[in-house]
Image (cartoon, rainbow, N blue to C red; front, side, top):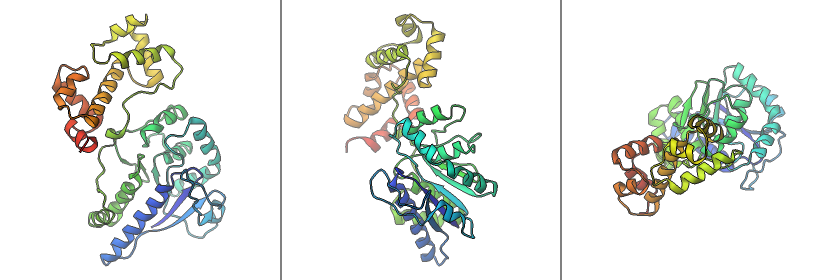
Amino acid sequence: MKAALFLMDRCIGSSIHGILDALIASNYTLIKSGLDPMFEWHTISMDGFAVTPINGLKIQPDYSLQQYQQLESEPDMWILPPVFHASSNYSRVEQTLIHSEKFLPVIHQHYDRGGMFLSICSGSFLLAKAGLMQNRPALMHWNNEQHFHKMFPQLKIDTQKNIADYGNIICANGGVLSYEHLIMYLVEGFAGHRIAVDTAKLLMMNLNASSPLAYRSNIGTHNHSDDLVLQAQRYIERHYTTAINLNTLSEKFNISDRQLKRRFSKAIQCSPLQYVQKIRIDRACNLLEITRLSSNKIVYEVGYQDESSFRRLFKKHMGMTMENYRQQFGRQ
C-alpha cells in the first residue's frame, strides 16, 4: 500500500514523524510474523523545499508536488497530517488554505479515482475546502472547531469519536496520539487484529483510544462580538453555584427568553442553560484534578442538588464517570 504524506510549513512535525514511526513499526511486526511488509511511503511538499513545522525542525520531503505527479505510479492513499496548530489564529488558518489551493485539484483527481484519504485534525480543512465533507462530519482537535464553523458554517463536526470511517475518507481527531491510533486503525483494517495488537504493544500504546470528550475544555469561547452574551457568560461564571434559570438571566439582562437563547446559540453555539452546565462540569473537572474531595461532595460544590442527575450529565459530556476522570487526570 503506497502512501503519500502531504507536508506544509507550520504543520505538526511530531505527527509526521509519528506517522512514519507507526508505519515502520507495522511493517516490522508483519515481517516478524512471517509476512511481507505492507506499507511504503513518500513525503511531498508543494515546492519540494524543506518545510518548517512549528517546532522549527525542518523536514526535507522526497518530492515536490509536481515531481510526484510525474511518477508512473499513483499512491493508494494521501495522508493529510495537521496542516496548522490547534492554537493558530483564524488569519493563519486562512493563509494556510490559500497556500494549499494548488493541492486541491490533486485531491479531486485522487478522490475521483477512488483513492483513499487519511485526515488528521486540521487535515479535514483541506478536504472541506475541496468539497468532500458535505455529508461527512469532520473530526479535529476541539480548539479548531470554532475556526471550522466560521470557515464552513454549513458543515458538521463530530466530537464524539476518535476516528470516523467514511469509506475512502477516514478522519481522526487531534491530539498527540491521534496519528498513531489512525495508523493502528488502518493496520487492523488491512492486516488484521493480531498484527494491530502486536504493533500497538511494540509501540507501548493502547490500541483503543479513550473518549476524546474528556480532553476538551467545557468553557465556551469569549471570542465573539455579542457584548450582552459576554456579560451573561460572566454572570454565569460568577454565580454557577446558585440556582440559575432562563427567566433569571432574561430578567437580569432585560431581554426575552427567546432572544437570549437565539443570541447565545449564534455567539457560542449553545443555549444559556447548556452554558451553565458546561461551567459546572468544568468546575467539577477542576476539583477532581486538584483536590481529594469525594465525588458526591463535588456535586454539591458546583451547585447541583441531585447527585445522580449530575453524574449522568458528567458522563454524557465527558465520556467517563467522575471516578474514571479523577483516575486519569487527578493527583496520584
